[in-house]
Image 1 (cartoon, rainbow, N blue to C red):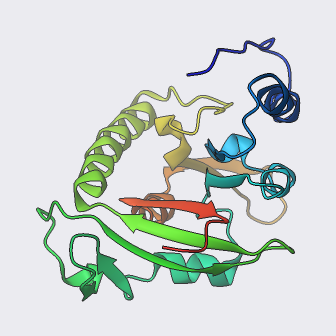
Image 2 (cartoon, rainbow, N blue to C red):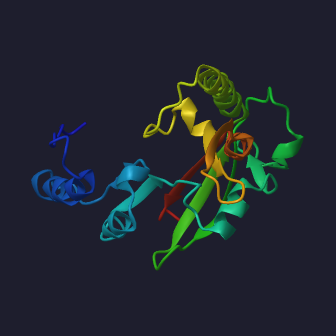
Image 3 (cartoon, helix red, strand yellow):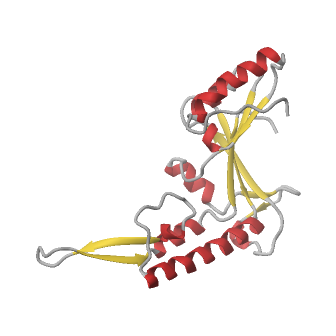
Length: 205
C-alpha cells in the first residue's frame, strides 16, 4: 500500500474518499488507477468521481438493492458461464459439490452512468452460507423455545432476524402478539446463496 489513512470512527466514511484520492493524485502523481471498494463506499457519486480522467472503478454491488428487473435477472439461474471455459450453464443443473466459479454480465445503467454488472456464483460459497444459516435457524428456534427474543435486532447476521411477530385480535379485543419462525425470510435468503455482484465502468474484457 501507498499509505494508511485513519478517520474518526463516528465520521461518515463516504466523505473521506474524495480528499484521500485528491492526495493520491497530487502527492503521488498517480493519475491512472482503478478504485476498488465494498458497497459501503460505492455510491453513484463516488462512481462518477472515479469515472473521470484516467480513473476507473470496480465496486461491490448489493444484489438486494438492485431494481426488480435487474435483481430478477441476477438471480435467474440461466445464462451463467463457467469461468474456466466460458461454457453456458444453468445453475439449477450443476452439482452442489461443484468447485467451479460461474458468472454472467450485462450493461447496467441505474441512473446516467454506463456500467457493467457482473454476477458470480460459487457452489462452494453457497454451501458455506447454507451451513451458517442452518446454525442460525437452530439458534432462532432455541430463542423461541426459551422466550429470549431480542426486541432490537441491528446485526444483519443475528439469528433473531428469522423471527417475526404478528398482532392478532378478535372483535376489537386487545391484540395478542404471536411470535413465530418466519420461514418465508429463510427461503428468501436461500436465493442469494453463493451469489456476489460487482459493478464497473471497465467495459472491455
